[in-house]
Image (cartoon, rainbow, N blue to C red; front, side, top):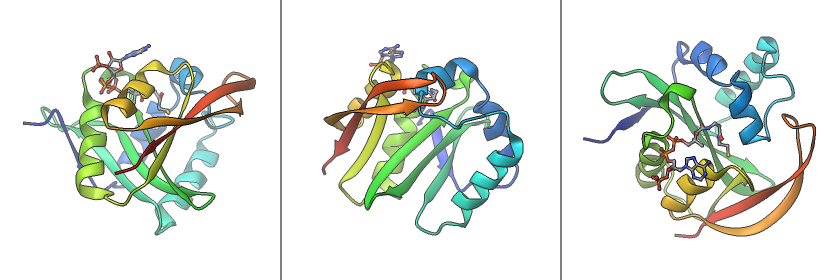
Length: 161
Ligand SMILES: CC(C)(COP(=O)(O)OP(=O)(O)OC[C@H]1O[C@@H](n2cnc3c(N)ncnc32)[C@H](O)[C@@H]1OP(=O)(O)O)[C@@H](O)C(=O)NCCC(=O)NCCS
């Protein structure tokens, strides 16, 4: 049995996602995060936009063992390119959950290619998840990190087929 499964997002997931994205350490590592993760109104408005945008494909990641909500994975359009993104709560990391969830997402939910993904150049865990799912680095860019308050390097990665 897979360690996690995907399902459509429900309203009850929202406060869980909010708590999960408050994690200061994770914000620092992910780097390209919301300006103020503690701003619940801005968070709600952001997620209203996401859920109301028919082009965005979103799934909650559920732990197979106990049905807890581990996080989310989504696909969105950025400058005409399809990109994926994900986030897990701290308690769920380093157990293979992100890799399993992304594999399921890419195999059965979003099957169009190519797909892009981005990760801070020093976000080793995220880069490893993407590598395990077949993404390869195609560019290195500079971008402003809200969480670090400075410009840092990020990799753009591509899944071609
Ligand atoms: C990035 C994230 C999704 C990874 O989820 P996860 O479930 O822990 O990932 P997995 O367990 O499937 O795989 C992690 C892999 O990275 C490796 N890893 C963990 N920390 C690492 C580090 N600092 N440097 C390099 N590799 C690392 C693990 O060993 C594992 O690889 P392995 O299977 O070859 O041993 C999760 O940590 C997260 O949500 N972090 C906070 C937000 C974030 O960074 N989001 C992504 C923004 S691009």
